[in-house]
Image (cartoon, rainbow, N blue to C red; front, side, top):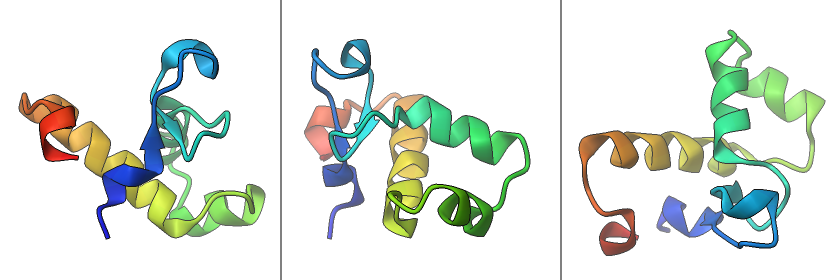
Length: 75
């Protein structure tokens, strides 16, 4: 399964920022939680609407964003 399919962009949700599965969970918020030291397990415990694959998708999206690849081409 392509994890990037879990990342959606909709102008009507979070001002068009990349989000997890059309929910109001921007990729940047998930990355921020990881960056503050939260473990994947802590995030999942605190936010049961998220799934482990959602967090992995956010990491993959960030990696591709920084690599200079066109995300549309690789998704």
